[in-house]
Length: 537
Image 1 (tube, rainbow, N blue to C red):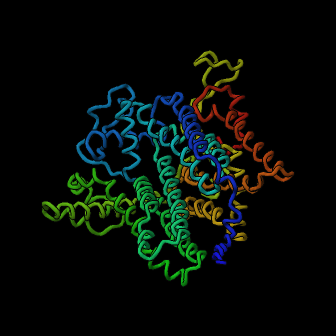
Image 2: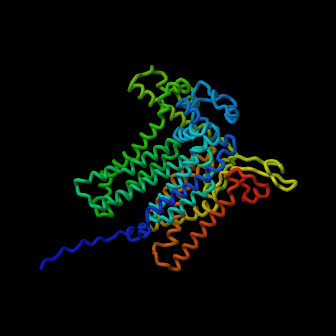
Image 3: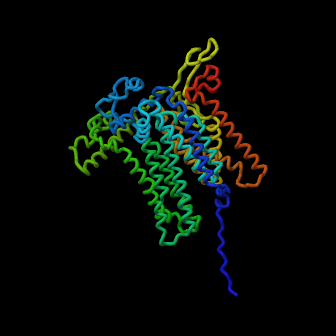
């Protein structure tokens, strides 16, 4: 009688034991639902996108920069009253000879330029890219939360919450840079989380020594490097998120090796994961970032002539750009010279950000400590004192009407997100739940660094990069309330009722605040009913 060898007993980890049964859900449902939500979001963002027909807030910089990039490959200065001439339908011939000193990288402006290429140099043209990217952000949000939680339902709820937030809506209808920054950061973090699961799957498969090289090639980290490079190429503030999630990628790698019983996991992770991960994430991000300056590099000589003796010396520097004193090079030498000029230009821009705006004031500036509770929103555009009978204003005698675009979030989402984030911090520290760590780390890297710059004008809409992580925290909180069991229980019923009621309340708030996000006509009394605090004016 022969004996058959007993199958090895594999003890599931705590994470595996607590894995939601939602992971077995039909993936097609998740993708179809996410695409439908993104399509709905695009419809809402495309609705009357060309109003107001003017440059709103900082659109006057970014839209015109994009138009210049489209025509010359680099940003040139404009003549006086260029805004008025462009709005009158004559956008050509408004440039001065010299380049413009731009203080943000060019990726976001190139995206705005694509919209202008498609729709022309008018408000719809310079805003359409924001509408597209803001809608794609909803799609990525659905898939991101689906990946973190394992739940298609929670992923779709998260996408819905993001799509009905007012700040996300307003920035998706303006030619500002922050919606692009938020989108690329979300993509980058999503890729790092996907890499965590990818590596664990490879380690769980027990690849033999001959195939261990496969853990060196981390395709999700390469994709994350591209996304983070584009984020840094939109605004430099993305570097904080890149640094922290790059560190988390290594910590997760070491934790995975320890969970699968490998000896000396931290040392092994440094050698097998740390260096490849750094090259894949940070190295690719750096290459992507430099490549985003190609237009500038091709016209470096124009900047050397215009700015080598002005900006750096004006804000505390001692010497002009070294490359401005050198003869023009050829071939590889020209590339090297242009890169050195770009470095000098970066020094000038950093000096501008760190010195030039110090102690300046702006009526809608706010401290980062007030952002998460929406202490001081930004009035993007407003028309007050619209008289009855004008613009279809039907206000009673003695009153007036108002149109406004107010960059403010959905209070239900932001205030609820603050409470959820407190729970995430406790669960990350107390229960060591990595999912909550993603939410906390994301919020920390997009919010806390701004406390270092609160002596200069900074604005609430910068917090759009915090929003995806607050929504993730909300989705995780809903998941805890509902539980992982498919069996109906009083706790599950209670969780479904609470989560459903919260979502409905957020939808009601969205409908209520819609007019002040979209420049709709309101009577003064209707507007007053939506301005809950004096600081919102």
